[in-house]
Length: 253
Image 1 (cartoon, rainbow, N blue to C red):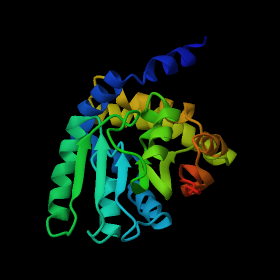
Image 2: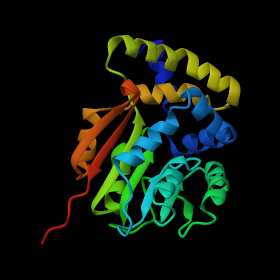
Image 3: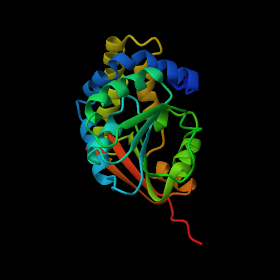
């Protein structure tokens, strides 16, 4: 095994304890660094996700998993004009605290507030078939068992509802791919580590997790294997991020 492979193996420890500790340690810097390191494009990516799979009044609530500080949950709340129940789940307490503080100001005058709860995406304490949309933004690759998380997302989604994944991906254009790899491997870890002083080397983990995670057709196949149909992917910003959408089949007699 090469030194690079060894480093990747170490940095890709996805145990629940490691992930919870890592994100808890960077929670105070989470939003600032997300916007800084993505050149503020991450806001546009979430907006495009909600536009591609909008919530529909009367079709049930929305669930956002690995909600972090709540940005996608908030985007769905705003898209529903505060009239659709939105739930955000994460297993990192410090990030949920930030999500709650952010959402309080936004949802105060709404008919439906955003409700957050702590949960492991691999074992959701929820009954099946109840959410019109189940989403996850930049969190699926951090879950130890990708297939189990997709299975849970599918289980709690209502028949006819949508499972939506927004995740980093690797650009396929050769010139852009080289620039992307240089930024991800050299610039992002140094800036993120310097700013956050993460004891878990969170910003070394980030590029390693992205480069190792299945994207495009490979992730679509994983979604199909969990029972989703009409699965499609939609690259954003030359493939730096991608939206994946699958539909839970309608139950037939």
